[in-house]
Image 1 (spheres, one colour):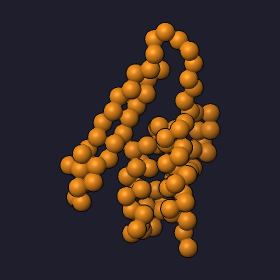
Image 2: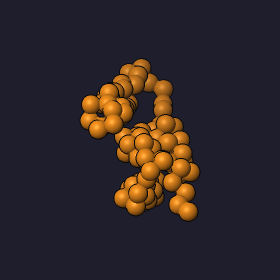
Image 3: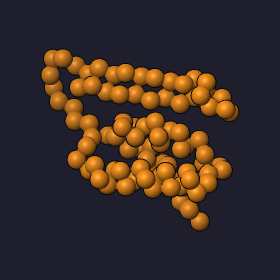
Length: 93
């Protein structure tokens, strides 16, 4: 059996804590936890390979006077045939 839910849970944790660059892809793949297919599982493995190749990436918070700028976007279910919303964000330090 493929550990799809466990993999998605791990990726969601990373996306919400230190790796916002994978948020959109992980949120999209998390919709398929009940009826995932081999293409979805291949995409999950691709994200893990991407993470392995970019170990030095992440968020580093440091004190400065400029602050943090965050850009958000949500599809509000318009782009999904089943009407589910997807959110993505980018953080500029």
